[in-house]
Image: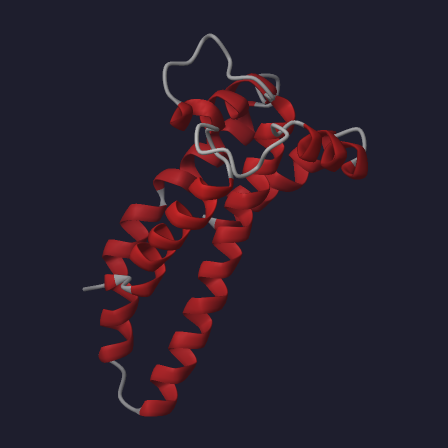
Amino acid sequence: MIFGQLSILVNSMMRMDSISNSYQNFTNSFEVDPFDLNQVFGFWDLIIGGTFMCLYLYGANHAAVTRILSTSNHKTAKTSSILNCIGLTVILLIGVLFGFIIKEEYPKFPIDLENEDQLLLYYIMNKYSEIPIFRGLFIGAILSGNPQITSLVK
């Protein structure tokens, strides 16, 4: 799952003109007032929504808690917790970088879409139409997450 997403991420970043110019465009694309309550995806969405999302997803991850509780000793549980934290941080950073790439590619919401949660798949299908292996790799990486987690919890 991680390798499929990383391959798309690296390829997408290589397709950018310049990372520094893209970062400048990214920071300039937001409205002037970051504390405006009416702005979509502004400061308050990130702080309040991001905090509760991280607490929900990473603070009480059922699969991780089950794995940690089923270990034989304290040292193994501690190692499992540290490895889980590193893995979740990597996955979170991949998501943040995908958000950066999509915001750079689509500063305005595309008319073809109905919801914001379709942007990543829309980007993959449009940008990688000439390379079908990347589209299949990305979809396979996304769909492999659920069976992988359920097989580990047995």
